[in-house]
Length: 254
Image (cartoon, rainbow, N blue to C red; front, side, top):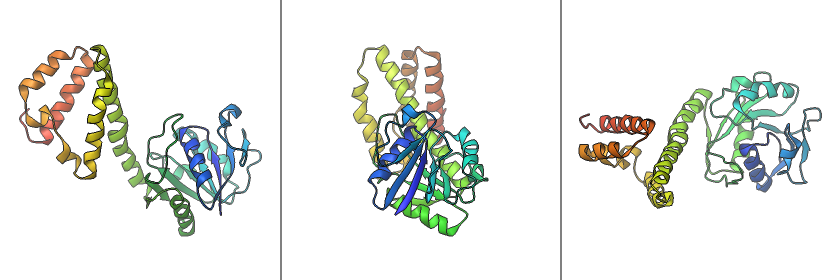
């Protein structure tokens, strides 16, 4: 049985708690959060605390908190004997330099408030300078996911950059599309089958092969007409920038 303490009350912490509570051979002993009201998601089996005065003994302590808070909060765990990990994709393991046994437990997924998701298909990236600790982190990861990968901090940070492009930037494009639809009284839901099919294709072909649209075809007339329709200056600049990038990638004349 792997014993775990979770620090944090945000989206990642809540999803991890929910998943670990259901996992075999895992026991969540404690959840720590600054705001007692935000600990309401914790079931009776685990102890809750709003400070670091009574940290219970555990095999693994998971800091599911903001990147900027990691090194500061880690100071409270410098005397613990368990593994201290954080869940950040962009933060080095060196931020846990005060810990006796530092590590990384990074679930590569987007987490949204009040949306609980399953972990079985979420890649979990782990790191530790100690082989035994790495094995324990792998064992914990395997209780949740079918994909547990060992990555160094530089590789993980690079993966996080790629994740920002495919997730955060893509979602912003959805926001722009929703704004354009709303401006012209069109239901954004009409685009959802297109969104789903675009993602589904990537199970079979590469993103480069999946690219379609007027920019890839070099359809200048359509590109010009689209720009005439777009009134917002920022949206026009974004449309031009992305269209030019697609044309350049696929060898069309700019």
